[in-house]
Length: 130
Length: 257
Image (cartoon, rainbow over all chains, first blue to last red; front, side, top):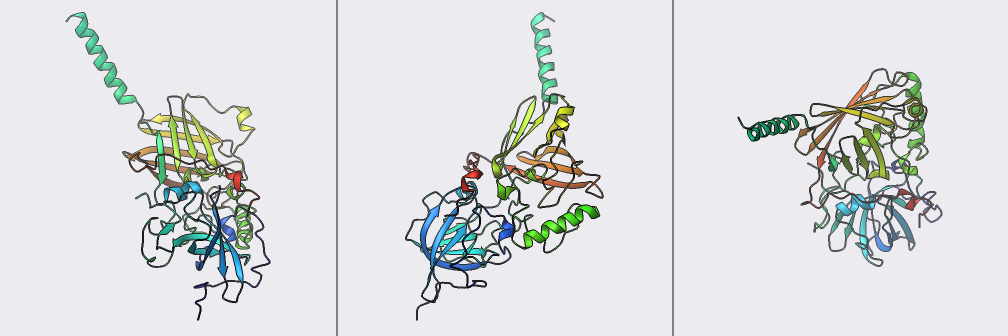
């Protein structure tokens, strides 16, 4: 049996395919920041843009559908200090993303961390300043 | 005593006097201590192996939370009018709206919120002026040290960063800020009025550890002045973190592809 691509999940609405992002730069208030869900899929696009980076991730929803998740990350400045770079994610590679889901039940969320297939963890912040 | 000795003695005296009175140099790039609250974002990038434990919450930074857990005693104490305003904004945030989130609109956080400096701060200093730059939204504030005072023209033209003047009290920089817009937030989304003023005492707690004690006064919005202390660690070139990055917030506006 094929393992479900969505490893653990609290909130995935039925309107996943129907709800586009209403705006590009979100307030944290747009997300359930106390929840973190995990999705796994194939990178369709990685946008290294201010004020937030984006990972568009094609995810198998376990029901035969492919869903493009829009995972929003912290700013390039922060992520660069955490070890990210403009080409750290390549289209076609498989990654696991932990993220806080959007309140509007769209297939989107705020990135907590990204884990590459080789186990490399891309954290969403540099180490603390003591 | 010959003339040379006299001149030498005078030089020693002048140097000694200068050493005593020269203010500290705050110049440099800094990062706040615990910028992301309890979590620091999990293991450092480049670590291998399976993630251990639960992933961090993305926004543990959150004074930006939605207020659904109410206010804590260490937050500014609001008058009923401004408490009602806070509750109104909280409702919009719980509903997922960014309507009252200035930074989500690429606007500057304003004083005193900008001194949280979650993404890093650069301080530029000379005798007459000290400038604080925030990587978050490329926000800037200038503190004039040349004894000028805010004119009526300045007072009639409030801004996000306000108008700051300062002087040295020994090794401590004392700063007063006025002429602040009333649509910004003290911290998180705690509102204030056009009567808000900000007083700061900035000093090195220890070499490289900068401390800013901030007192916010607002007779319309606060039942009493509110004090908070921010601390920042100076970055070093050795760690490769002494350069901030361009933010260019508008790059992402209207582009969600």
